[in-house]
Picture (cartoon, rainbow, N blue to C red):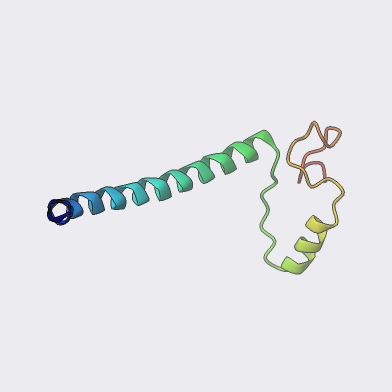
Length: 85
């Protein structure tokens, strides 16, 4: 058991640097995939990007009151979320 603790103390800095790199790669890949997914969705016309800074409550009510809240056009009879208004 003493050899285990001696080795653990010796290798702990290397293990912690691996943990740090894993966290950095995870956050980076999450950010990159989110941005690429948004660009892809806007390009496909599945998401409409608008700036409505005047009345965010009206925007939220309009989004919540839609019948078709799905992002796949084939499910909604050809209409995609945010398209065709």
